[in-house]
Image 1 (cartoon, one colour):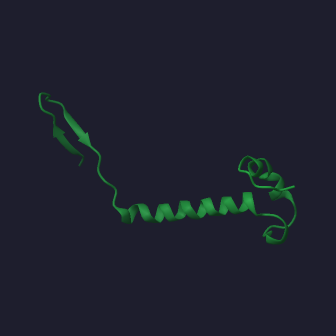
Image 2 (cartoon, one colour):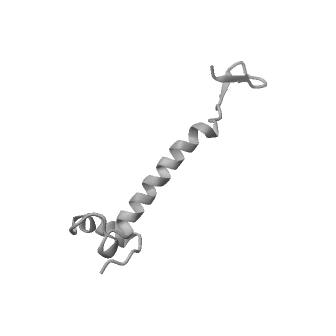
Image 3 (tube, rainbow, N blue to C red):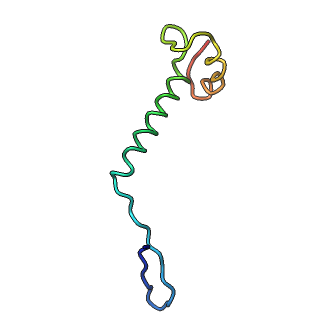
Length: 74
């Protein structure tokens, strides 16, 4: 049930936001952080000696993003 209060001089109830407990946010924040680190790896370091995927298709796929973020690749 939503938290409702009545403001002074108004008969309309106002809904208050319900806080989300940290226990519910933490797993999603960790998952999002891991996805961001994985994306950063593929954009920034997926080539040469640190390559996880063989070939150059990952490099070519993220090439423009690499330049946009300031990573050298040539």
